[in-house]
Image (tube, rainbow, N blue to C red):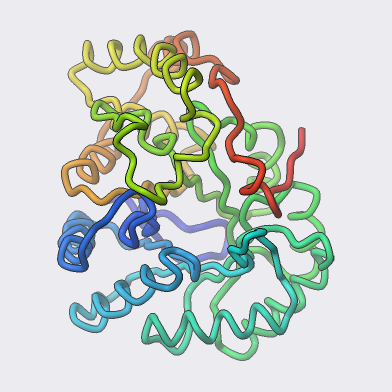
Length: 329
């Protein structure tokens, strides 16, 4: 798989990475053996970029990754993890130096590592100025705990403030055909500053696929049970809006997930490293197949006609999930 540099001075990563929230059960139960099989399939396919967080399964995702890495010892793997979110209820965000240091130590222990390639502030803590956050992260870099740092769900203005104190390696934001906010300034800011851009949920939490799970079948605790776009009424209307896109993919002989991922890869001058998440090896392969798809100007124009920016009904998050998510534009 094609490798790219994450930002101007970040690590070399695979063009498509793997988000590891699903292996901890965020979208339904899964076993460690199934997680290992998925991670093996990703690695064998050339995926070198893996993304996790301390709250994915309350540490379970990191523990699974730690045991998998200890067993397989994959050379050249680039690993990112995150901290900031205190689940609650109510959900709180803490980017204090004390909290981030403590959570990073816990993550390193679960991962079985002495340092991590990339450490994100998972959300924006309004009590901690971006410059102060940057100073905390810079200290962790100097101490050899992390190679670089990132921010997730921040605004371009906050990114610029942090970057001016210590360069940000990467920004992680939700970005897909149905979530286009980063086009209102974040993608441009990352390009201008030499910061990597990492889209998460590039398949719209599974709705941009051919095998869409119905809300009535969601497992208890599934992230989508409270998500406005998946609630009754909105879900059906969103499915209807996406149907012509599925037909377009089928006419091309392409899986819907593959075409949706290819659209993401075609944005940002080809310098984005999306991190789709899945529990399924078959779905993983559909995602990775996008690396071989070349979209023409006519293809992109037709996709824009079928799914114009802003087509999705409902907010990205339920109110309880919006803590620390910065809006802009």
